[in-house]
Length: 386
Image (cartoon, rainbow, N blue to C red; front, side):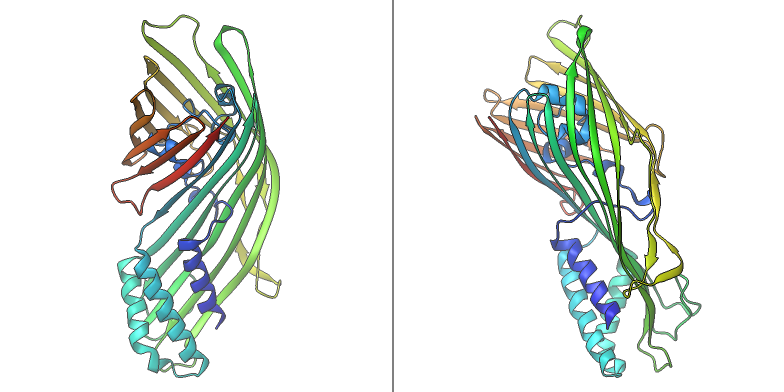
């Protein structure tokens, strides 16, 4: 059945795929996750001032001026709120249910149906994210691609009056809605220093939004309708926008210390994505529209550096509370050891502490970061430097 294929595909995507970015309306934008990276995560997502490679195009284009050489970063960050084994078992059970539905003997799949309901009771919302980023910088110029894919499935069980706008089914039953959401940016950046310690930067981005989803209800009881719902085909739109960034390092500094400040305005050109829902045959689905708008938002930060070996950063992201999100707080400390070969990092990523490590060789830097629960925050990355 189509609904089982959609569920299985979405859940497998949440574990194994690297896709485009994120969005089902502005409220699902994960502000702390939209600009990924392993070194960034290790510092609590406070990376407006510390970035020193091509990922600056996604964080703060003015920071390209600090790269000062040819860099090629490739990084990926992941988050889930479930165990991979749970999803493996869930997919197997959904396939069993699908096979029984095809033969109109859903009752024979009762055990699998019960296991699916147990997982739904344990996790009312299944959510997973993957965020790869890559780029290339040369001098004060850079190109980058960054994305986040978010897969989310919401469930309700044992309801007799329906859920998610679907008619009621006989108990035992299961209702679910969800899909895969993507937001991808491909951009070019430029940074230019000015007198008095000021650097300005510009990133021009082509943003693509994708969405595919489903609504479903199923029951193992004898009923005229054992499976109901709606599958939505993938819809996508692309738009252009820009980010403006600034760095300021005051000419007069405290002894043995450097202080820098940053400000970034994102989505300087507001963009609207019209994503009317369509079914798997390409026909419009009345009453459903996945369109949204990206409005300007502002990030601010300050960095203090001691003896070229230790930095502390504090940042406020989305202080304008734009696009349905709230302001988030990010802070981090990085300290280099053994002649700046090994780095240890600790940070606060909006609501969780994080830890990070780095190894800096002559032409290669390797970074990793993790939260208290690795499945909730985990990132690895490499950056080539010439």
